Length: 178
Length: 223
Figure 1 (cartoon, each protein chain N blue to C red):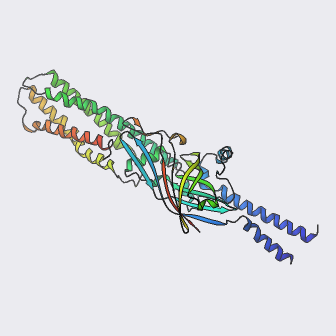
Figure 2: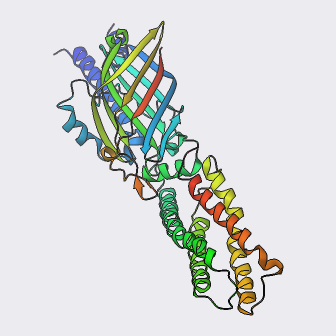
Figure 3: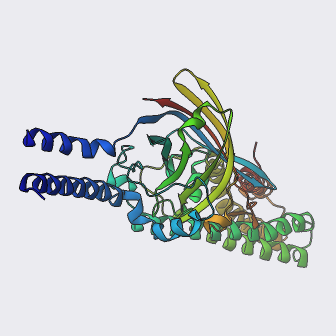
């Protein structure tokens, strides 16, 4: 009797910390925008991967994307972007956030994002995102108001004129509940 | 406490400890964290004001969960140094290219007075001197572009391709123009009318300057 009880308890302990539900990032388009008096440039990546683990009414999300996966349409610019963002030294951008499980039913969410990029960790508070749920998939769109100075990135310059400090990142993601 | 109850309590305790250790280890071996600045401190500081900031909870997903192999998440200092050197050299290339534009324009402007019938002319001397200066600056500019390291496997895409293609025009042009110019200068100095291949000095110079200007614009203006 005791042995059965022990076995049941041993099984129960890991189960206590297991996830209630999971979210997986199905599709994503991340677009950074750089402004210069002579250029308006966008770099796009579809290589983000993400996962959300929900437990006790709260979901913890991690989204990661390789820095070198961003394509601006010009290889020279992309290599320069990789250099200024120290993309070889810190090859992955990660975004972490925690949301209530009930948020998936909302039309708008405000997320506190913790972003690791270029060797820096920066928090963006209450970033608004639009949600559009379709059965098990949820489409999320929004813009992260990132700036170069937040991540201690020296603004690249063209013809000695530096780009603007603001580099908003447009986020379009489709998440699927598992 | 009865011996059996004590045994059960001990097993539960060990089991819980092992579970939490395994999860904590999983969280600590996140590849991204090794290359990032101390995260725990910044998290702890910032989370005070963040109602739903990410916690270091045991259920948080890791980079390994997302399928990023540790090698991909690891930083490469050697590659970063190569990129830094490349950018440094290309910045010099860009600045030198802009500086070269000044004597190039001056050479083009002074070319209108460089002809004439006299065997000696200060305007012609000035044109020749400016042309020589342009040549020296041009080849210094080119050196920094040609010697800038490129990460292996990089293929040129976008407007930089046009910039590089135009170099096949202004590069040989910058070699030919001063040679033809020297021939024309020599013929003029002897009181001869410019003849032979030296007659091409003007047209070659125009094409060269045009290609140089287009190369400058190809990386400055988006079209």
